[in-house]
Length: 122
Image 1 (cartoon, rainbow, N blue to C red):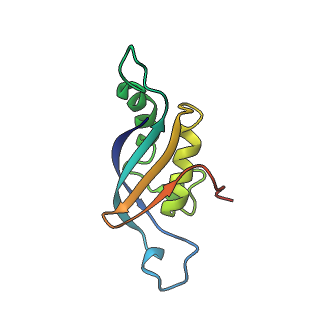
Image 2 (cartoon, rainbow, N blue to C red; image 1 turned 180 degrees about the horizontal axis):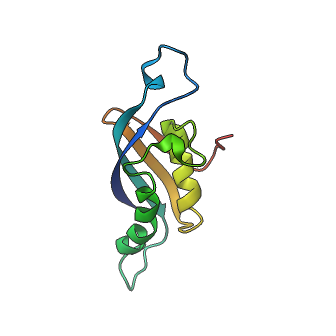
């Protein structure tokens, strides 16, 4: 069974590798919407896959490292595209909660990235 928990954070960034004149070359901000999805067996005794409080305990401090920050200043996010941010989050959450199976990150209501751990950011 899959379960999910959602988080939001506000961050500024700029994309240094886009061509001159591209609007994303300038510093700007987004309210990001993060959904972390976990896959695991339903515990018949407890009645859940995992306690949502345990997810929050792990994920919130990671999200707080991005909230109200200039992401370009964070190690590993020098080119903070939505895709790179999703990988960065995965690399920090997956070791703590191995049941992580998918990250959905929206940087606007209509644009985002879905990451399942299949690609490296390199």
